[in-house]
Length: 373
Image 1 (cartoon, helix red, strand yellow):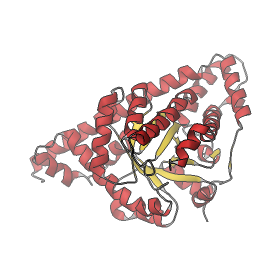
Image 2 (tube, one colour; image 1 turned 135 degrees about the vertical axis):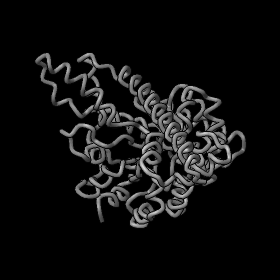
Image 3 (cartoon, rainbow, N blue to C red; image 1 turned 90 degrees about the vertical axis):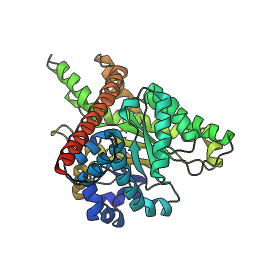
């Protein structure tokens, strides 16, 4: 049994943070599922941008859709939906064997809509109906406008991957948005046993930003090296404590009696950005029951090769709290860090999305000139 398989025995689901047509067509993804190494998959605009711009695998479909008048956004979501449908079908066996608690694939609403509640909900419904697979999750960012959209989507029976969470404070609102959605769904007489959600807490980006601030401080002859590479893990520990508290509440117990599924914390952005750190730091340090770790292929392969799958988060909540207090003493505000990361994250996905649409437009023009339909 390799470390990826051991994670599942410890209560954590390893998901792949990547999708490509080549992986689908070659059978590589199916092989990983058959081997029991991964139990789900996430995608985002950057992943699709890399997949489509980095290969010619999508050209035939781009040419056909362009020739019948599809605009670039319609072409993208047709391409993405085709890939997501194939991936969902591959993971369907996991979904069925786990009683509809795992085996999910995620498709994100347009980053252009991150600050528009009603448009996000409309897009979520459209994509949910277009893919039409029970093990789909629609990714909605945890922006302030996104919180209401999450509640509305959940109440409509749509499973949601809440993305771009950076702060414990915002995560608390995400938990509330999920529960309100379930409560509204019950009020409307709906079955909530098929609704699922994960809360995607971003990890490595936090250390990248905090470590840079710590470096500025250490340049003034203050020894704080011991704090580097620890903030993201501390933040995740505090988030997990909040999660545990939420599922022990009477409010959650009432929902659970109606068949509600736990909204699992999902550790995202778990590749190590600083070469000084272990390439499996954000996997080994964040192993806990009722969680997901979505890893890019390089991190997944590294953990499979030399990861140590041992249950338990690296820090406890007390140590995590002390770390945050030390940061505050040095003038580093997690509120400011989280706000910047959310703004940057939305902008980054928007930029990738615009680049992706430009690539599709360029391909459409080139294929039309070449007569490929």
